[in-house]
Image 1: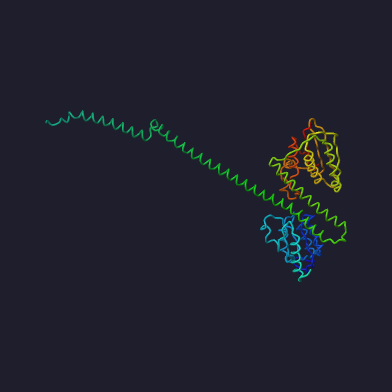
Image 2: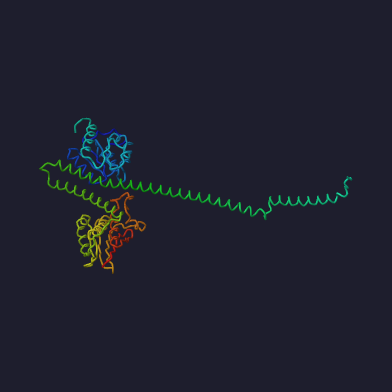
Length: 138
Length: 307
């Protein structure tokens, strides 16, 4: 099981962790990723995401992270994640409906504005999962 | 010229001395007076003091005015800042509430496009339903925002006609039965027959639907909602009672306020529903009140002028 002190387990190729509090949106993202041939796991907030990662339930090649969530929001998740050596390396795409882009800068490896542009989301997933998997194919 | 008789001069001298003494006394008195005899100086001093006081008063008034102005400017600045930040909060939340369902629509449409012709019809139908739900949520929010703008600009117009309010209420309850069933909530009615009133049927239904939606939202699984309508001569009284958590007394005044949910972290909407409902009821010349004991549900009472 992965923990802050252990060597990181290699990410599961093509597994995306979707952290989004809006159930219908989370479901839709997961459904599209699955239709594209990825495996996707959805959780409702940052705390759930940290738990899934720390207990080793998921080893994603990418995290799609919503910014505005109750309980542990995107920023809190990100600071916890970056403080945990085993988790810090997992690339994060921050998703937000925020009006002001600067509000989310520096909190992820990439930014995906809402409403979600399907082509852009899939391109980001493709790029990051391919990089994390160490090859150009998924 | 004979030598002046010194002795003869003496009386002169004495006279002169006397005169001089008198003069000196007068002078002394004048000097004394100038220095401080209140009888002479007081009127003068009073005059000077009065003019000084007047000047001081004018200066004080000017300072007060400047201070007042400054306080006004400061208050205006604070109010503007608060308005701007609440406008920013409002925009952020509205855009969030619109962008999420829009994302749901585009994502599910993308999934639908990827379905091959042999796809399970049930799955296709499910995707269609999801798109439909998200579109309906967006439509509701947009309509509520437009209504809010209408109300604020005093443009909420009613098309009143004689209607059977009993029938309107029963019909409304029936349209909410499927939603109630999904939560195992019992919808009971206690509606007197043929309650007539001059109302805008569409708007009144909208107002009552918001109240009923709220009751469903806050009702526990398996709870009970009672919708009652009766004559309260000369008015009509419609009451919707739920078994939800109720509303604490200090919040009862706020439930009909515009955007009452905005500051609520666990909000599930903007808090426009009851505000719109009350505005509609008031446009009919009616009243909307809340009765609630925390822990024992809430009753929203609509009173409409009867005929």
